[in-house]
Amino acid sequence: MIPSVPSRFRRGLLALVMATAATTASAQQAPPPAPAPAPPPVASTQLTQPTTPVGPVRRISIDEAVTLSLEQNVSLAVQRMNPGISELDVVQSYAQWLPNLTGQFRFQSLEQPVATTLQSGSANFQQDQWLGNFGMDQLLPTGGFYSLGYQALRNENNNQFATLNPNTQGNFTFSFEQPLLRNRSIDITRQQILVSKNNLAISEMDFRNTVVSTVRDVKNAYWDLVVAQSALAVQRTTLELSLQTLGDNRKRVEVGTMAPIDIVQAEAEVASNEENVIIGEQTVAQAQDQLRALILDPRTVDFWNTTFETTDAPSLATSPVDVDAAVAKAMSGRLDLQQARKQLESNDVRLKYFKNQTLPALSANVDYGLAGLGGTVLHRDGGGLDPGEITSTSSIPYSEVLKDVFGFAFPTWSFSLNVSYPIGRNGNKVNFERQQLTNEQNLLQLRDLERQVVQQVRDLARQVNTNLKRVSTTQAARSLAERRLEAEQKKFGVGLSTTFNVLQAQRDLAEARNNEQRAILDFEKSRVDFEASQEASISGAGAGSLTLGGAIGQGTGSAGSTTSVTPGAGRVGQNR
Image (cartoon, rainbow, N blue to C red; front, side, top):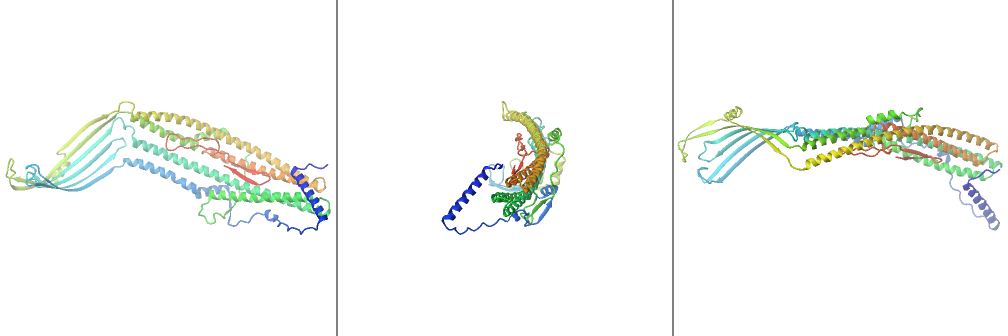
Protein backbone atom coordinates (compact mmCIF):
# COMPACT_ATOMS: atom_id res chain seq x y z
CA MET A 1 0.00 0.00 0.00
CA ILE A 2 1.36 3.43 -0.99
CA PRO A 3 1.65 5.72 2.03
CA SER A 4 -0.20 9.01 1.93
CA VAL A 5 1.85 11.94 0.69
CA PRO A 6 1.21 15.59 1.55
CA SER A 7 -0.18 17.79 -1.20
CA ARG A 8 3.06 19.77 -1.65
CA PHE A 9 4.92 16.54 -2.39
CA ARG A 10 2.17 15.36 -4.78
CA ARG A 11 2.48 18.67 -6.63
CA GLY A 12 6.27 18.21 -6.72
CA LEU A 13 5.94 14.69 -8.16
CA LEU A 14 3.46 15.88 -10.79
CA ALA A 15 5.75 18.73 -11.81
CA LEU A 16 8.70 16.33 -12.06
CA VAL A 17 6.74 13.86 -14.26
CA MET A 18 5.54 16.67 -16.56
CA ALA A 19 9.04 18.08 -16.83
CA THR A 20 10.41 14.62 -17.70
CA ALA A 21 7.75 14.08 -20.39
CA ALA A 22 8.42 17.51 -21.90
CA THR A 23 12.13 16.85 -21.97
CA THR A 24 11.60 13.50 -23.74
CA ALA A 25 9.33 15.08 -26.39
CA SER A 26 11.81 17.87 -27.04
CA ALA A 27 14.63 15.37 -27.42
CA GLN A 28 12.74 13.60 -30.23
CA GLN A 29 12.04 16.83 -32.18
CA ALA A 30 15.21 18.94 -31.76
CA PRO A 31 18.82 18.51 -30.74
CA PRO A 32 19.34 18.93 -27.02
CA PRO A 33 20.42 22.43 -25.90
CA ALA A 34 23.64 23.08 -24.04
CA PRO A 35 23.29 22.19 -20.35
CA ALA A 36 22.84 25.15 -17.98
CA PRO A 37 25.55 25.67 -15.39
CA ALA A 38 24.75 23.98 -12.10
CA PRO A 39 24.26 26.28 -9.08
CA PRO A 40 27.15 26.35 -6.65
CA PRO A 41 26.80 23.68 -3.98
CA VAL A 42 25.96 24.75 -0.45
CA ALA A 43 28.72 24.07 2.03
CA SER A 44 26.55 22.02 4.35
CA THR A 45 29.49 20.75 6.33
CA GLN A 46 30.26 24.34 7.34
CA LEU A 47 26.72 24.89 8.59
CA THR A 48 26.91 21.86 10.85
CA GLN A 49 30.03 23.21 12.59
CA PRO A 50 30.02 26.00 15.20
CA THR A 51 31.00 29.41 13.86
CA THR A 52 34.49 30.51 14.92
CA PRO A 53 34.25 33.70 17.07
CA VAL A 54 35.98 36.77 15.64
CA GLY A 55 36.78 38.22 19.09
CA PRO A 56 37.57 37.01 22.60
CA VAL A 57 35.44 34.25 24.10
CA ARG A 58 34.33 34.74 27.69
CA ARG A 59 32.95 31.89 29.76
CA ILE A 60 30.30 33.27 32.06
CA SER A 61 27.82 31.98 34.60
CA ILE A 62 24.48 33.57 35.35
CA ASP A 63 25.75 34.90 38.70
CA GLU A 64 28.77 36.46 37.01
CA ALA A 65 26.48 38.07 34.43
CA VAL A 66 24.37 39.61 37.20
CA THR A 67 27.49 40.91 38.99
CA LEU A 68 28.83 42.48 35.79
CA SER A 69 25.51 44.20 35.11
CA LEU A 70 25.46 45.73 38.60
CA GLU A 71 28.97 47.07 38.03
CA GLN A 72 28.90 48.13 34.37
CA ASN A 73 25.31 48.58 33.19
CA VAL A 74 25.07 52.19 31.97
CA SER A 75 21.32 52.56 32.53
CA LEU A 76 21.75 51.37 36.10
CA ALA A 77 24.58 53.87 36.63
CA VAL A 78 22.24 56.64 35.48
CA GLN A 79 19.52 55.56 37.91
CA ARG A 80 22.07 55.28 40.72
CA MET A 81 22.43 59.09 40.68
CA ASN A 82 18.75 59.78 41.44
CA PRO A 83 18.91 59.09 45.22
CA GLY A 84 21.84 61.50 45.45
CA ILE A 85 19.80 64.18 43.69
CA SER A 86 16.85 63.57 46.02
CA GLU A 87 19.18 63.77 49.03
CA LEU A 88 20.25 67.23 47.90
CA ASP A 89 16.58 68.24 47.95
CA VAL A 90 16.46 67.27 51.64
CA VAL A 91 19.61 69.27 52.34
CA GLN A 92 18.16 72.24 50.49
CA SER A 93 14.97 72.09 52.56
CA TYR A 94 16.95 72.06 55.82
CA ALA A 95 19.02 74.99 54.54
CA GLN A 96 16.06 77.29 55.15
CA TRP A 97 16.70 76.90 58.90
CA LEU A 98 20.32 78.01 58.68
CA PRO A 99 21.22 81.40 60.19
CA ASN A 100 21.83 84.22 57.75
CA LEU A 101 24.58 86.77 58.38
CA THR A 102 24.11 90.32 57.08
CA GLY A 103 26.39 93.31 56.88
CA GLN A 104 26.67 96.74 55.25
CA PHE A 105 29.05 99.69 55.08
CA ARG A 106 27.79 102.94 53.57
CA PHE A 107 29.04 106.49 53.13
CA GLN A 108 26.67 109.31 52.21
CA SER A 109 27.50 112.95 51.42
CA LEU A 110 24.51 115.30 51.57
CA GLU A 111 24.20 118.92 50.49
CA GLN A 112 20.83 120.67 50.26
CA PRO A 113 19.33 124.15 50.62
CA VAL A 114 18.12 125.14 54.07
CA ALA A 115 14.55 126.00 54.85
CA THR A 116 15.12 127.50 58.31
CA THR A 117 17.87 129.32 60.11
CA LEU A 118 17.83 126.62 62.77
CA GLN A 119 19.10 124.01 60.29
CA SER A 120 22.41 125.58 59.38
CA GLY A 121 24.38 128.76 59.62
CA SER A 122 24.97 128.96 55.89
CA ALA A 123 22.95 128.87 52.69
CA ASN A 124 23.44 125.15 52.30
CA PHE A 125 23.18 122.27 54.73
CA GLN A 126 26.08 119.79 54.37
CA GLN A 127 26.44 116.45 56.05
CA ASP A 128 28.78 113.47 55.71
CA GLN A 129 27.59 110.18 57.16
CA TRP A 130 29.44 106.89 57.69
CA LEU A 131 27.28 103.87 58.54
CA GLY A 132 28.23 100.30 59.26
CA ASN A 133 26.00 97.47 60.49
CA PHE A 134 26.06 93.73 60.83
CA GLY A 135 23.52 91.24 62.05
CA MET A 136 21.99 87.80 61.85
CA ASP A 137 18.52 86.43 61.25
CA GLN A 138 17.14 82.90 61.22
CA LEU A 139 13.94 80.99 60.57
CA LEU A 140 13.28 78.66 63.52
CA PRO A 141 11.96 75.07 63.45
CA THR A 142 9.01 76.29 65.56
CA GLY A 143 7.87 78.51 62.70
CA GLY A 144 9.19 81.63 64.42
CA PHE A 145 11.70 84.16 63.16
CA TYR A 146 14.29 86.31 64.90
CA SER A 147 16.76 88.97 63.86
CA LEU A 148 19.45 90.85 65.74
CA GLY A 149 21.88 93.50 64.63
CA TYR A 150 24.26 96.25 65.62
CA GLN A 151 24.62 99.60 63.83
CA ALA A 152 27.47 102.10 64.14
CA LEU A 153 26.89 105.61 62.78
CA ARG A 154 29.04 108.76 62.47
CA ASN A 155 27.55 112.11 61.38
CA GLU A 156 29.39 115.33 60.63
CA ASN A 157 27.54 118.46 59.41
CA ASN A 158 27.64 122.27 59.36
CA ASN A 159 24.64 122.81 61.62
CA GLN A 160 25.62 125.65 63.99
CA PHE A 161 23.11 124.45 66.60
CA ALA A 162 24.57 120.92 66.80
CA THR A 163 25.74 120.00 70.27
CA LEU A 164 27.67 116.90 69.13
CA ASN A 165 29.53 117.41 65.87
CA PRO A 166 30.73 115.01 64.68
CA ASN A 167 28.59 112.55 66.63
CA THR A 168 28.76 108.76 66.88
CA GLN A 169 25.90 106.42 67.62
CA GLY A 170 25.59 102.77 68.51
CA ASN A 171 22.31 100.85 68.27
CA PHE A 172 21.57 97.23 69.09
CA THR A 173 18.24 95.77 67.90
CA PHE A 174 16.49 92.45 68.51
CA SER A 175 13.21 91.30 67.02
CA PHE A 176 11.32 88.02 67.48
CA GLU A 177 8.07 86.78 65.97
CA GLN A 178 6.32 83.50 66.83
CA PRO A 179 3.10 82.16 65.22
CA LEU A 180 0.64 80.87 67.82
CA LEU A 181 -2.00 79.18 65.62
CA ARG A 182 -1.39 79.09 61.86
CA ASN A 183 2.17 77.85 61.04
CA ARG A 184 2.75 76.86 64.69
CA SER A 185 2.72 73.04 64.45
CA ILE A 186 3.67 72.92 60.75
CA ASP A 187 4.58 75.44 58.11
CA ILE A 188 5.70 75.36 54.47
CA THR A 189 9.33 74.68 55.43
CA ARG A 190 8.55 71.72 57.65
CA GLN A 191 6.17 70.38 55.02
CA GLN A 192 8.90 70.55 52.38
CA ILE A 193 11.39 68.80 54.67
CA LEU A 194 9.04 65.90 55.46
CA VAL A 195 7.96 65.50 51.83
CA SER A 196 11.55 65.65 50.56
CA LYS A 197 12.53 62.94 53.06
CA ASN A 198 9.75 60.73 51.77
CA ASN A 199 10.78 61.50 48.19
CA LEU A 200 14.32 60.44 49.06
CA ALA A 201 13.03 57.12 50.39
CA ILE A 202 10.88 56.72 47.27
CA SER A 203 13.89 57.48 45.05
CA GLU A 204 15.96 54.84 46.86
CA MET A 205 13.15 52.33 46.40
CA ASP A 206 12.91 53.27 42.74
CA PHE A 207 16.62 52.58 42.34
CA ARG A 208 16.24 49.22 44.08
CA ASN A 209 13.32 48.51 41.74
CA THR A 210 15.61 49.30 38.79
CA VAL A 211 18.22 46.92 40.19
CA VAL A 212 15.67 44.12 40.48
CA SER A 213 14.41 44.79 36.95
CA THR A 214 17.96 44.85 35.58
CA VAL A 215 18.81 41.56 37.28
CA ARG A 216 15.62 40.09 35.86
CA ASP A 217 16.50 41.30 32.34
CA VAL A 218 20.02 39.89 32.65
CA LYS A 219 18.78 36.49 33.77
CA ASN A 220 16.20 36.36 30.99
CA ALA A 221 18.82 37.43 28.42
CA TYR A 222 21.16 34.73 29.74
CA TRP A 223 18.51 32.03 29.36
CA ASP A 224 17.61 33.41 25.93
CA LEU A 225 21.21 32.86 24.89
CA VAL A 226 21.33 29.38 26.45
CA VAL A 227 18.20 28.27 24.65
CA ALA A 228 19.18 29.97 21.39
CA GLN A 229 22.45 28.08 21.42
CA SER A 230 20.62 24.86 22.30
CA ALA A 231 18.09 25.43 19.51
CA LEU A 232 20.94 26.04 17.06
CA ALA A 233 22.50 22.75 18.14
CA VAL A 234 19.15 21.03 17.50
CA GLN A 235 18.98 22.47 13.99
CA ARG A 236 22.54 21.42 13.23
CA THR A 237 21.80 17.92 14.48
CA THR A 238 18.68 17.83 12.30
CA LEU A 239 20.75 19.02 9.33
CA GLU A 240 23.29 16.26 9.94
CA LEU A 241 20.50 13.67 10.01
CA SER A 242 19.05 14.97 6.74
CA LEU A 243 22.52 14.96 5.13
CA GLN A 244 23.02 11.39 6.28
CA THR A 245 19.65 10.41 4.82
CA LEU A 246 20.53 12.14 1.54
CA GLY A 247 23.85 10.26 1.36
CA ASP A 248 22.18 6.91 2.05
CA ASN A 249 19.53 7.58 -0.61
CA ARG A 250 22.14 8.43 -3.21
CA LYS A 251 23.90 5.13 -2.56
CA ARG A 252 20.63 3.24 -2.90
CA VAL A 253 19.85 5.02 -6.17
CA GLU A 254 23.28 4.10 -7.48
CA VAL A 255 22.68 0.42 -6.77
CA GLY A 256 19.14 0.62 -8.12
CA THR A 257 17.24 -0.10 -4.92
CA MET A 258 15.57 3.35 -4.71
CA ALA A 259 13.80 5.69 -7.08
CA PRO A 260 15.50 9.04 -7.93
CA ILE A 261 12.50 10.95 -6.57
CA ASP A 262 13.57 10.02 -3.05
CA ILE A 263 16.77 12.01 -3.58
CA VAL A 264 14.69 15.10 -4.46
CA GLN A 265 12.79 14.79 -1.20
CA ALA A 266 15.99 14.42 0.79
CA GLU A 267 17.63 17.38 -0.98
CA ALA A 268 14.59 19.57 -0.26
CA GLU A 269 14.79 18.61 3.39
CA VAL A 270 18.50 19.46 3.52
CA ALA A 271 17.87 22.88 1.98
CA SER A 272 15.11 23.60 4.51
CA ASN A 273 17.33 22.56 7.41
CA GLU A 274 20.19 24.70 6.10
CA GLU A 275 17.90 27.71 6.21
CA ASN A 276 16.95 26.86 9.80
CA VAL A 277 20.62 26.74 10.80
CA ILE A 278 21.26 30.15 9.24
CA ILE A 279 18.27 31.63 11.11
CA GLY A 280 19.44 29.94 14.33
CA GLU A 281 22.88 31.53 13.99
CA GLN A 282 21.27 34.93 13.56
CA THR A 283 19.17 34.35 16.68
CA VAL A 284 22.26 33.43 18.70
CA ALA A 285 24.00 36.62 17.51
CA GLN A 286 21.00 38.69 18.57
CA ALA A 287 20.95 37.01 22.00
CA GLN A 288 24.68 37.72 22.35
CA ASP A 289 24.07 41.41 21.62
CA GLN A 290 21.21 41.57 24.10
CA LEU A 291 23.28 40.08 26.93
CA ARG A 292 26.32 42.15 25.96
CA ALA A 293 24.37 45.41 26.18
CA LEU A 294 23.11 44.54 29.66
CA ILE A 295 26.34 43.46 31.37
CA LEU A 296 29.20 45.30 29.66
CA ASP A 297 30.24 48.93 29.54
CA PRO A 298 30.21 50.16 25.90
CA ARG A 299 33.70 51.54 26.50
CA THR A 300 35.02 48.01 27.06
CA VAL A 301 37.65 46.90 24.57
CA ASP A 302 36.16 44.47 22.00
CA PHE A 303 32.67 45.30 23.27
CA TRP A 304 30.93 44.20 20.07
CA ASN A 305 33.31 41.31 19.36
CA THR A 306 33.16 39.57 22.74
CA THR A 307 31.39 36.23 22.54
CA PHE A 308 29.86 34.70 25.64
CA GLU A 309 30.04 31.00 26.36
CA THR A 310 27.37 30.13 28.91
CA THR A 311 28.35 27.70 31.67
CA ASP A 312 25.04 27.27 33.50
CA ALA A 313 22.27 24.99 32.37
CA PRO A 314 18.64 25.33 33.40
CA SER A 315 18.04 23.72 36.80
CA LEU A 316 14.49 22.48 36.88
CA ALA A 317 12.63 22.57 40.18
CA THR A 318 11.11 19.39 41.48
CA SER A 319 8.18 20.84 43.41
CA PRO A 320 5.57 23.58 42.79
CA VAL A 321 6.10 27.04 44.29
CA ASP A 322 4.41 28.18 47.51
CA VAL A 323 1.88 30.75 46.34
CA ASP A 324 0.68 31.89 49.78
CA ALA A 325 4.21 32.54 51.06
CA ALA A 326 5.04 34.47 47.89
CA VAL A 327 1.92 36.64 48.23
CA ALA A 328 2.72 37.42 51.88
CA LYS A 329 6.29 38.38 50.98
CA ALA A 330 5.12 40.63 48.16
CA MET A 331 2.52 42.40 50.31
CA SER A 332 5.08 43.22 53.00
CA GLY A 333 8.18 43.98 50.97
CA ARG A 334 7.28 44.83 47.39
CA LEU A 335 8.86 48.13 46.44
CA ASP A 336 5.98 49.66 44.51
CA LEU A 337 3.67 49.11 47.49
CA GLN A 338 6.24 50.69 49.80
CA GLN A 339 6.55 53.63 47.43
CA ALA A 340 2.79 54.06 47.34
CA ARG A 341 2.62 53.99 51.15
CA LYS A 342 5.42 56.55 51.38
CA GLN A 343 3.52 58.75 48.97
CA LEU A 344 0.45 58.44 51.20
CA GLU A 345 2.60 59.65 54.10
CA SER A 346 3.53 62.69 52.04
CA ASN A 347 -0.15 63.27 51.33
CA ASP A 348 -0.89 63.11 55.06
CA VAL A 349 1.78 65.77 55.62
CA ARG A 350 0.15 67.98 53.00
CA LEU A 351 -3.27 67.41 54.60
CA LYS A 352 -1.90 68.40 58.00
CA TYR A 353 -0.36 71.54 56.53
CA PHE A 354 -3.52 72.61 54.68
CA LYS A 355 -5.60 71.98 57.78
CA ASN A 356 -3.25 74.18 59.80
CA GLN A 357 -3.58 76.92 57.19
CA THR A 358 -7.31 77.16 57.88
CA LEU A 359 -6.59 78.49 61.41
CA PRO A 360 -6.44 82.24 62.18
CA ALA A 361 -3.06 83.88 61.78
CA LEU A 362 -2.12 84.85 65.35
CA SER A 363 1.45 85.83 66.15
CA ALA A 364 3.36 87.41 69.03
CA ASN A 365 6.05 90.01 68.29
CA VAL A 366 8.74 91.28 70.61
CA ASP A 367 11.12 94.12 69.68
CA TYR A 368 13.97 95.35 71.87
CA GLY A 369 16.56 98.04 71.24
CA LEU A 370 19.56 99.62 72.98
CA ALA A 371 21.26 102.89 72.08
CA GLY A 372 24.33 104.93 72.91
CA LEU A 373 25.57 108.36 71.80
CA GLY A 374 29.00 109.96 71.68
CA GLY A 375 31.23 112.30 69.71
CA THR A 376 32.69 115.77 70.08
CA VAL A 377 30.72 118.03 72.48
CA LEU A 378 30.70 121.69 71.45
CA HIS A 379 30.44 124.20 74.34
CA ARG A 380 29.06 127.61 73.26
CA ASP A 381 28.58 130.94 74.98
CA GLY A 382 25.31 131.82 73.33
CA GLY A 383 21.74 131.14 74.28
CA GLY A 384 18.27 131.10 72.84
CA LEU A 385 18.23 131.53 69.10
CA ASP A 386 21.86 132.64 69.08
CA PRO A 387 24.08 129.62 69.36
CA GLY A 388 27.07 131.81 70.15
CA GLU A 389 30.69 131.00 69.64
CA ILE A 390 32.36 127.73 70.48
CA THR A 391 34.28 128.29 73.71
CA SER A 392 35.55 124.76 74.31
CA THR A 393 35.10 121.15 73.28
CA SER A 394 35.10 117.79 74.98
CA SER A 395 34.93 114.26 73.70
CA ILE A 396 32.75 111.26 74.49
CA PRO A 397 34.74 108.28 73.12
CA TYR A 398 33.12 105.39 71.31
CA SER A 399 33.96 103.12 74.23
CA GLU A 400 31.41 105.11 76.23
CA VAL A 401 28.90 104.54 73.45
CA LEU A 402 29.46 100.78 73.68
CA LYS A 403 29.24 100.98 77.46
CA ASP A 404 25.84 102.65 77.21
CA VAL A 405 24.61 100.12 74.64
CA PHE A 406 25.68 96.95 76.41
CA GLY A 407 24.99 98.43 79.81
CA PHE A 408 21.30 98.75 78.88
CA ALA A 409 21.43 102.47 79.58
CA PHE A 410 18.78 103.47 77.04
CA PRO A 411 16.46 100.49 76.34
CA THR A 412 13.43 100.52 74.09
CA TRP A 413 11.05 97.57 73.80
CA SER A 414 7.60 96.67 72.55
CA PHE A 415 5.27 93.68 72.53
CA SER A 416 2.33 93.10 70.18
CA LEU A 417 -0.20 90.46 69.17
CA ASN A 418 -1.26 90.39 65.52
CA VAL A 419 -4.29 88.50 64.24
CA SER A 420 -5.95 88.06 60.86
CA TYR A 421 -8.64 85.66 59.63
CA PRO A 422 -10.30 85.63 56.21
CA ILE A 423 -14.07 85.20 56.27
CA GLY A 424 -15.78 82.66 54.04
CA ARG A 425 -14.63 79.66 52.03
CA ASN A 426 -11.18 80.94 51.27
CA GLY A 427 -8.34 79.33 49.32
CA ASN A 428 -6.87 77.59 52.38
CA LYS A 429 -10.14 75.79 53.07
CA VAL A 430 -10.46 74.77 49.41
CA ASN A 431 -6.92 73.35 49.46
CA PHE A 432 -7.74 71.37 52.59
CA GLU A 433 -10.92 69.93 51.08
CA ARG A 434 -9.12 69.06 47.85
CA GLN A 435 -6.37 67.25 49.74
CA GLN A 436 -8.97 65.30 51.72
CA LEU A 437 -10.52 64.02 48.50
CA THR A 438 -7.08 63.25 47.06
CA ASN A 439 -6.15 61.18 50.14
CA GLU A 440 -9.38 59.19 49.96
CA GLN A 441 -8.79 58.57 46.26
CA ASN A 442 -5.21 57.45 46.87
CA LEU A 443 -6.29 55.04 49.61
CA LEU A 444 -8.65 53.38 47.14
CA GLN A 445 -5.86 53.27 44.54
CA LEU A 446 -3.58 51.60 47.07
CA ARG A 447 -6.21 48.95 47.76
CA ASP A 448 -6.53 48.34 44.04
CA LEU A 449 -2.75 48.15 43.67
CA GLU A 450 -2.58 45.56 46.47
CA ARG A 451 -5.20 43.54 44.63
CA GLN A 452 -3.19 43.78 41.42
CA VAL A 453 -0.01 42.69 43.19
CA VAL A 454 -1.71 39.61 44.64
CA GLN A 455 -3.19 38.77 41.25
CA GLN A 456 0.17 39.23 39.53
CA VAL A 457 2.05 37.02 41.96
CA ARG A 458 -0.63 34.33 41.74
CA ASP A 459 -0.58 34.45 37.93
CA LEU A 460 3.21 34.16 37.82
CA ALA A 461 3.15 31.30 40.32
CA ARG A 462 0.60 29.57 38.14
CA GLN A 463 2.85 30.08 35.12
CA VAL A 464 5.79 28.51 36.96
CA ASN A 465 3.78 25.44 37.93
CA THR A 466 2.28 25.13 34.45
CA ASN A 467 5.65 25.45 32.72
CA LEU A 468 7.14 22.86 35.06
CA LYS A 469 4.47 20.40 33.92
CA ARG A 470 5.13 21.38 30.28
CA VAL A 471 8.79 20.52 30.70
CA SER A 472 7.91 16.98 31.84
CA THR A 473 5.48 16.39 28.97
CA THR A 474 7.81 17.83 26.32
CA GLN A 475 10.69 15.73 27.61
CA ALA A 476 8.53 12.62 27.29
CA ALA A 477 7.45 13.69 23.78
CA ARG A 478 11.08 14.24 22.75
CA SER A 479 12.09 10.81 24.06
CA LEU A 480 9.26 9.17 22.09
CA ALA A 481 10.24 11.12 18.94
CA GLU A 482 13.80 9.84 19.25
CA ARG A 483 12.57 6.26 19.55
CA ARG A 484 10.24 6.72 16.60
CA LEU A 485 13.06 8.07 14.40
CA GLU A 486 15.27 5.19 15.41
CA ALA A 487 12.50 2.74 14.52
CA GLU A 488 11.84 4.40 11.14
CA GLN A 489 15.54 4.28 10.28
CA LYS A 490 15.69 0.58 11.09
CA LYS A 491 12.57 -0.11 9.05
CA PHE A 492 13.94 1.98 6.20
CA GLY A 493 17.16 -0.03 6.27
CA VAL A 494 15.26 -3.25 5.61
CA GLY A 495 12.88 -1.70 3.09
CA LEU A 496 9.81 -1.51 5.32
CA SER A 497 9.59 2.32 5.35
CA THR A 498 9.97 5.21 2.94
CA THR A 499 12.16 8.27 2.73
CA PHE A 500 9.17 10.42 3.44
CA ASN A 501 8.48 8.63 6.73
CA VAL A 502 12.12 8.99 7.80
CA LEU A 503 12.15 12.70 6.95
CA GLN A 504 8.86 13.20 8.73
CA ALA A 505 10.27 11.47 11.82
CA GLN A 506 13.29 13.77 11.68
CA ARG A 507 11.04 16.83 11.48
CA ASP A 508 8.94 15.55 14.36
CA LEU A 509 12.06 14.99 16.46
CA ALA A 510 13.32 18.52 15.69
CA GLU A 511 9.94 19.93 16.66
CA ALA A 512 9.87 17.87 19.88
CA ARG A 513 13.35 19.08 20.82
CA ASN A 514 12.39 22.67 20.11
CA ASN A 515 9.22 22.28 22.17
CA GLU A 516 11.31 20.95 25.03
CA GLN A 517 13.71 23.86 24.81
CA ARG A 518 10.84 26.34 24.61
CA ALA A 519 9.21 24.81 27.71
CA ILE A 520 12.50 24.92 29.63
CA LEU A 521 13.05 28.55 28.66
CA ASP A 522 9.48 29.50 29.56
CA PHE A 523 9.93 27.79 32.92
CA GLU A 524 13.21 29.53 33.72
CA LYS A 525 11.92 32.96 32.69
CA SER A 526 8.63 32.53 34.54
CA ARG A 527 10.58 31.55 37.63
CA VAL A 528 12.80 34.64 37.25
CA ASP A 529 9.70 36.83 36.90
CA PHE A 530 8.03 35.11 39.85
CA GLU A 531 10.99 35.77 42.13
CA ALA A 532 11.32 39.38 40.94
CA SER A 533 7.59 40.05 41.37
CA GLN A 534 7.92 39.51 45.12
CA GLU A 535 10.33 42.46 45.33
CA ALA A 536 9.49 44.92 42.58
CA SER A 537 6.96 45.78 39.91
CA ILE A 538 7.34 43.70 36.74
CA SER A 539 6.33 45.19 33.41
CA GLY A 540 3.99 43.09 31.35
CA ALA A 541 2.16 41.07 34.02
CA GLY A 542 -1.12 42.88 34.28
CA ALA A 543 -0.71 45.29 37.20
CA GLY A 544 -1.78 48.82 36.49
CA SER A 545 -0.16 52.14 37.30
CA LEU A 546 -0.66 54.24 40.39
CA THR A 547 0.03 57.93 40.98
CA LEU A 548 -0.64 59.10 44.50
CA GLY A 549 -1.34 62.83 44.57
CA GLY A 550 2.29 63.94 44.47
CA ALA A 551 5.29 64.43 42.28
CA ILE A 552 6.31 60.79 42.48
CA GLY A 553 3.95 57.95 41.61
CA GLN A 554 5.15 54.43 40.97
CA GLY A 555 3.29 52.15 38.64
CA THR A 556 3.39 48.42 38.54
CA GLY A 557 3.95 46.43 35.47
CA SER A 558 3.86 42.79 34.73
CA ALA A 559 5.93 39.89 33.82
CA GLY A 560 5.35 36.92 31.69
CA SER A 561 7.80 37.67 28.95
CA THR A 562 7.97 34.61 26.78
CA THR A 563 10.45 33.32 24.31
CA SER A 564 9.32 30.97 21.59
CA VAL A 565 11.27 28.51 19.52
CA THR A 566 9.50 28.00 16.22
CA PRO A 567 9.21 24.26 15.59
CA GLY A 568 11.37 23.12 12.74
CA ALA A 569 13.01 26.50 12.24
CA GLY A 570 15.19 27.07 15.26
CA ARG A 571 13.89 30.58 15.77
CA VAL A 572 13.95 32.06 19.24
CA GLY A 573 11.63 35.06 19.37
CA GLN A 574 11.18 37.22 22.43
CA ASN A 575 8.10 39.11 23.41
CA ARG A 576 8.73 41.56 26.23
